[in-house]
Image 1 (cartoon, rainbow, N blue to C red):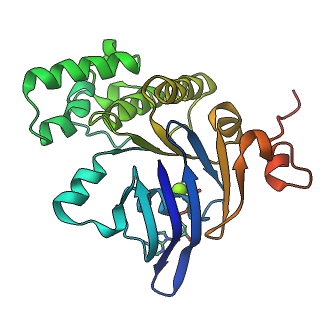
Image 2 (cartoon, helix red, strand yellow):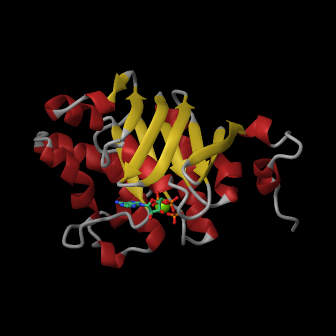
Length: 241
Ligand code: ATP
Ligand code: MG
């Protein structure tokens, strides 16, 4: 479970996140939507502790990350896999080597690394691209490798920041199917940052709308779409064909 309470992030005099409360139950997918500059990526960076919150707490599976440091923090962060829009793969490493990197950094035995890389590449449908370099992969394929790498340390939580933006509909569908599968098969708790309402409709259990650093509306997708006068419900209506 991810439990964010009273999360505030300030850079100097600028308040980017202002009292965020958000809970994602185990094995659920929550989407955070909102306009550019709303604070979505900052929220994701606070949850994986790339940024320190100014105030508030972020509990992942019970442990308050903001209160940890040193080895305890590193251990807690291993529970959190992250996938960014650009996938951030290392250009000089093959797909398989990119996926293996977090495990090698952990000092896992080579036989175990190889076995798990094979499993992960298979899960994301990229076994036949294992020896390709990032420049030899499409955007959607790079994203899938990024997801496989995000899962390398068997996280209980996966953060995805705009993982499907800029992808064609087929690649987007493949990534969304993969995220749903991770939730359903492995019970991974997933926080998806997106500006695409299709993504929310397609996979999210819970949705929160962020604006100017505050959550202005949230709820289960099933409930939100039934609300009258709700901007989020309107945004979630499918486009007429
Ligand atoms: P987008 O949809 O464009 O990705 P976002 O919702 O992810 O937007 P953030 O990247 O979280 O937005 O940025 C939110 C605000 O915080 C922006 O106004 C940005 O300028 C500001 N901001 C982000 N990082 C910093 C920083 N290190 N120092 C100062 N301001 C920052
Ligand atoms: Mg962003």
